[in-house]
Image (cartoon, rainbow, N blue to C red; front, top):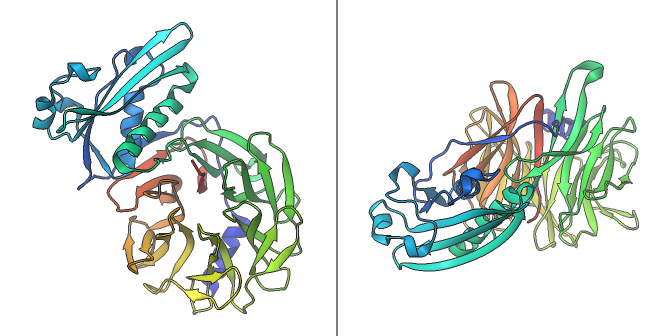
Amino acid sequence: MKRLQRLLLAVILGFAATQAQAQITVDITGGALGALPIAVVPFEGGDAAPEDIAGIVREDLTRTGLFEAVPREDFLARPARMEDVNFRNWRVIGADNLLVGSVERNGGQYQVRFELLDVYAGSRMVGKRYTASGSDLRRLAHTIANEVFRALIGRGGGFNSRLAYVRAAGAGDARQFRLVVAQADGHHPQTIVTSSEPLLSPAWGPKGERIAYVSFEAGRSEIVVQNVGTGQRRTVAQFKGINGAPAWSPDGSRLAVTLSRGGNPDIYILDIDSGETRQFTSHWAIDTEPVWAPDGKSVLFTSDRAGGPQIFRKGVRGGDAERLTWDGDYNASADISPDGRLLTMVHRRNGQFRIAVKNLETDTTRVLSQGPLDESPTFAPNGVMIAYTRTHGGTPTIATISVHGRAEANLIQGNGDVREPAWSPE
């Protein structure tokens, strides 16, 4: 009970976020055993471009854990187009697929071309041309990674999605909290809110246009909805007591929130337009951290009604709450994959807090991260990666890990602490 109270306090009183100017780099630390081998050849003319397009594509694919990039030092040649490829050379070094391309400057724009090749069939799977400014080349690289992912995996890669997070920098009266939005690989961060009071629990709307979050700018917790593009903000919950943990319904019309307006923290359903609320849970226990199922028919939440923090699910139209997690005495902070098959959560094992994934179809749980203090997991829109807060050496950073544990990537920050990542839709 006390642990969940501290958890709820953390959700409400929060931590926070980062300077938009901080440089973020990706360090891929995990292996990719059993992943699909792909050779990504440096694009012809790419050395003169402001972004390493092939390198960005390579990192995007490797972070998913579904691809293993063939080391560049193993390449026997560096072709730029299919007609220059000797497919036997690429079979020898174990590549199943090959990505080649070129970058050519044309005035103030860049012409970018790529081809994805099937090494064993000796054929082109996809090939496209693009025109982009220098400032858009990183986003274009993510687009190319999406094309490769879709061609080989059969669905979108989510590499053009965004990551919101909170950063706190400074000390005492000079401490500032920032809500930051960056590209999915952590680059090009932009601060959308700055406050001397805590900001926390960012949650993306289903179209990626709005973010709901908790603000203490008014001297108490309030839930704010903000348009990311225009900056327009509206306070949607300012009830007496706790206003926390917003989660969007799949259609974007409602928020599931934690309120203590009745004296005890419970889950409520809030209509965005009308402001009307409906009490969703009513229990002596603490119910918090709601998240909607992708079909909108149920809400998952953390509750200590079983004696310790566990994940429960309840139908939106009513009925009893169903306990979903049984492995261990602590499971909290749930998020659910876009296809509804996987549940990620913070799982305590041997006194350490780690990120775990539960397959809701097979009822099996896999612990992914190493701990000792990992929290706030959030699924990527491709359903194969999870971002989370990782505290290592006393400094919180944001990391990603693949759902099979094959690959990890640390987003290495500059000054300040970062917490509470939220992954946007594509």
